[in-house]
Length: 231
Image (cartoon, rainbow, N blue to C red):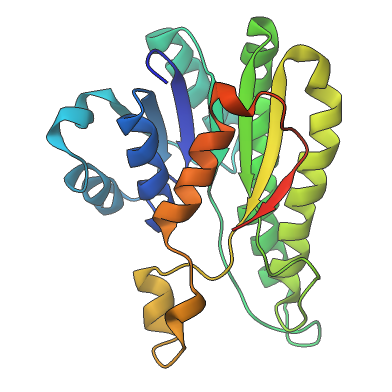
């Protein structure tokens, strides 16, 4: 991916760090919109020093269309192109319908679905002008079939899959692919803390998910679009 420019939203989180590192190691310039300064420090600290010069991070709220639009314009000003978008921002909330407040419902839709919508709208003009691009959205294995008890999360992540499949049809004539990756429970510090007694033998590593994302971002995946790939 030498010479390619990738935007990784959520790039300072557990999965985002793995994705950012994987794309940097493949030669890409990786641009990360971030919200928490300490998490950006964690991303930088975890990278091989030889890769840090190609990490371009700027504070931006990816659920705010104005802020993300400014972020993309900055990327284009500095690097002249956007080849890849990984929509990795997200959140989790449990609760069935009766116990889910409207505020929790809206928060899940904003973090998981609106962030992907804003991300796609932000990069599509540049990708369509170039007649090339890769968009990878992060959904969840828990939504196929839809799981009860986490209804706001389930619906928001199912919406990501629908967005992926519909957008793939809209842009297929422009050389742009749109795919979704559906991780099962990932082996992250946050999940270990939340589920200390769980059997982790079936959990997936962020690095494994990042490998699938890196493939979808590559030229080798040019014929794959509209897919929802469980990991």
